Length: 258
Image 1 (cartoon, helix red, strand yellow):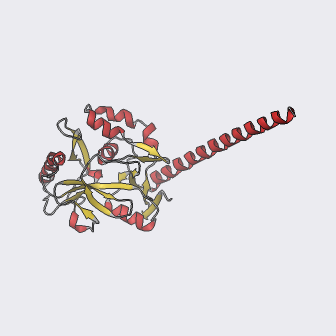
Image 2 (tube, rainbow, N blue to C red; image 1 turned 180 degrees about the horizontal axis):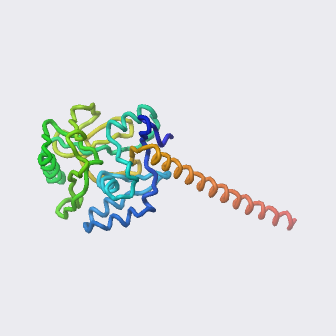
Image 3 (cartoon, rainbow, N blue to C red; image 1 turned 180 degrees about the vertical axis):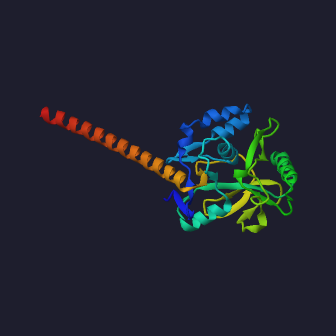
C-alpha cells in the first residue's frame, strides 16, 4: 500500500506515521483538564506504523500542538481527492476525516447543538455567511475546552481560517450527508466522501491522519517508515534465528541420547 503521493510539484500527501506518540503527544494533552476531552485525545494510537483511532478532536489538537513540522497541514478534501486519484491504494480501507460540515446553526442531535451554534458564531464574526452550509477544514480549527459538552470541548476557528479556505458544501459531490447541524466530513472505506457522521469524537482502528507538506517533510516521513520497517525486519530475523537455533538444539539433544 502506498503511504505517500505527490499531488503538485514539491507538494506531497502522506499518511502520517506514529512518531508523534514518542515526541510528546500524550504530554501535550495534559494542557486540558476535562476528562472526556482527554479521553478522546488520548485514543490516538498506532497500527502498522501509522497513527490510528483519529477523530476531529485529536486531529485538531495535533495540528495545533507544535509537534508537526511547520509546513505540515491536515489534508483537505480537495487534496485528498487528488491524492487518491493518483494512488488508489493510499488509504486502503481506511477512514480519513477532512473537515467539519456545518449545515445549520443548530442541530437536532443534542450533543452537537451547542458546538454547531458556537461554530456558526465563529463564522459570522469572520464575516462568513453560512448560506447552504460550509465545509470547514480541520486545519483551520482549534479546541476550546467546555466542560458542559459531551466532547469536553467545542471547535473554534484559528488564525489560518479565511473566506478562501472555508468552502461551500455544495461545491463538492457527496455520497451521503446530514440534513442539519454539525457533522464530520470524511473519506469512507469504499473511497467516497460523506458528511453524515454525527459523533464528533468517533474513531476506529481504521481511522488515519493524512497531512500535506513540502518535499523535505515528506522525505522525513518516508525515512521514518523505512527505518521502522528495517527494525521490524531485523527483529523478525532475530526471532526466526532464535526459534531455529532452539529447535536445532532440541534436535541435537535428542540425537545425543540415541
